[in-house]
Image (cartoon, rainbow, N blue to C red; front, side):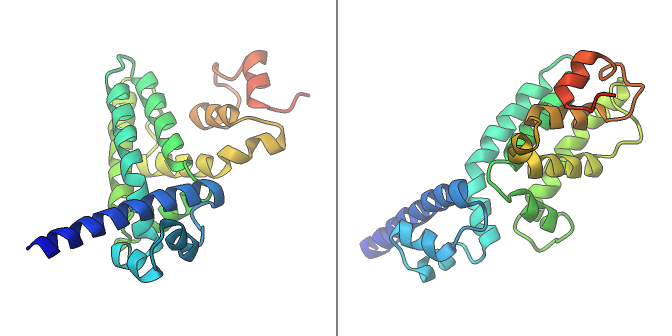
Length: 206
């Protein structure tokens, strides 16, 4: 009995070390960081890593678990907002931060979007469902277009997350990309028909 307790404690310790090493590696090298290097940094063998996390997606799910708690807290903050438009934008900002946590992170979510067997598939469906809650409320209050769907909005958040950390290289900012995502890029939207908004979004001047 005591031996089993020690074994379980060792397993929990190894799992924690692997997750810490993976989070550090993902922060530096993105989600495609070497799993062998992660195991080495954690002080375990590759076999131990794969016993705990059979695939890269399983490891990514483990790393994202604590970040999900932060995301859900921000969801609750957005739900408490009186204005539906503010609530939707608050959720989309939180979602974008979550999806852009690591370089390359959007791709696994895109892969999981229709892959039922992916360990990220449940998370993906949950995020789409939450997005739909905020979107339906905003549509009911005429704060969002009826033609917009939750899956499309979620995919747009994934697209924005792809370029979030690259915006500065091309003379714009992540906030500008998010503003375009929220308000669109066609003329006729009062939110963008001011010189100040044009300056912020990085739109070309005549």
